[in-house]
Length: 220
Image 1 (cartoon, rainbow, N blue to C red):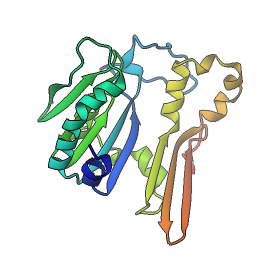
Image 2: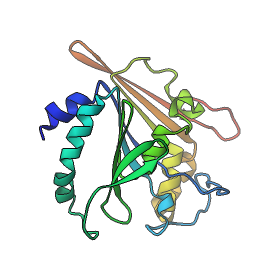
Image 3: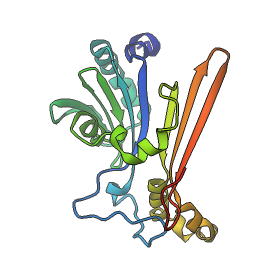
Image 4: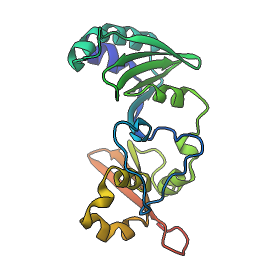
């Protein structure tokens, strides 16, 4: 497979890479930063984020053919140890996802939904991308983090700082004495938005940090 000619050229001009939380179980209440929370391990996979790559305006036929030819090399490269490794087809809504069980914690998954390509280490990404899930662009936190940034950047990055800290605390960071000394200040951080815009001969970078002062309105 010629990755550049067969796959990359089929991906169009817009793509996104995301680290996403899995959906919380119904009735679960997400702890706030700094609040005591039960730590988790791989036994609680619902608390472990997954990684997803999405590309829009994809040449579906070219991408589908290239990815099908990549299945065997991927199985060999990933060193799958679970039984007789093979991709299996899983129906997710109206989309067929192709899933390779790499380990108990990782499912290498790809799917094409019309002109949208999703590649992830969990099939939940396909459901999120192809279904009626809330869109990041509709999130108030995302809007606040990006409203002062250029409208058409070459690269846009968004970090949910509060969500990352909640995850890190449950993974053991809360027990670190050095972190405990700054946890109160870090708890004020909400989001970071970053935009890089390419011009002839230079790159312009804009950064926006949103904070929520205790007892006050959200600032920037």
